Length: 202
Image (cartoon, rainbow, N blue to C red; front, side, top):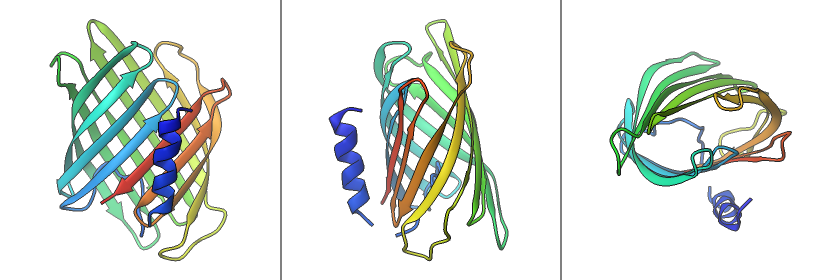
């Protein structure tokens, strides 16, 4: 884990009121995200003109392709349903390289959660220079306690992911914390890889 990941996540943890890992913020809101796992490292900012979509820019280091670049990002909320006890979301995700319009990715992510249970999934496909790579994951979790608004919320998660290069599922535990405008996810794979995600919502 690089020192810049530790610094950014530590700064985020000091900040503070309630958020989740949505790909779109409230209308007029912005979100800064940092991610690092066995396939890529990235810093990503997006702005949401509407609760239905977001526009952003992402700087990414692709570990599989051994490349660095920036992507213009567009996310769209395909479906959302709220009940008295749960919420579900389905998003379309996409990005195109600022250097080459033929270098792009697209996919979907979805989640369903109550105050005690969480489930999520994602699929993305990257097309670049005749080399296509897809990534898939599923995630389930429970909350060991139910916090009030403004409290530190904690999730115990199990994540399983696969890519089209290795074609093997890797399954490992993760911890998710959020408080106020800050979310942090930390996992450690069985192949010795960190899976980190930090988010701050403005």
